[in-house]
Image (cartoon, rainbow, N blue to C red; front, side, top):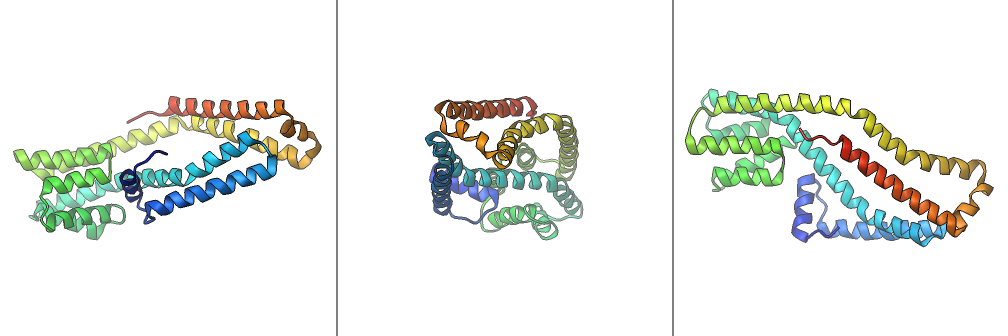
Length: 250
């Protein structure tokens, strides 16, 4: 969680949230203390309380990162339609900056707000290169990089931008088809990771409810503490290993 203020602010901006960086840090600290206190109140194990402290401190940042990933993915899904609008507008004789405004008016968030921000950058005096690079900085992805690169190259070398955008849209749609196929093929691995994570928790809760007298030895005995620690470490290692296996970049 060693994140500089500027990086944290950029991460929040990319996620589409309006929370301030200091507010996010404050929520992280409060949640960490609350979870650590509750875990100590329930099990009286320093190792579990320390783990709860770390997890509670990381959860708000994880939520921001998840929002960032979802927003970028949604932008990429909307991008082919936005490119089609730009292509038709260029063929109709509109200048490039006007196509950005048309996308902002006809599309939904996040494409609309990002293209409107890019249009405003150009309209308020920034050149096209700087505005497009700012778009790439706000949305760091391979798809956006392909779009920005094609536009900047066309601006420097010339050519038919409408045809270039048409090819970019085809490539992006093809990439999404491959991604969906990969996601289908790796569904079993993701399910295995969830089972590995949830089965011990469900089993612990079931035993706690049905036969509570069976657990004090596990919770109070130092050997039981070691077993819980080793079990948690093994689960984390197993989940990380499964995610590494099924993670395929397209």
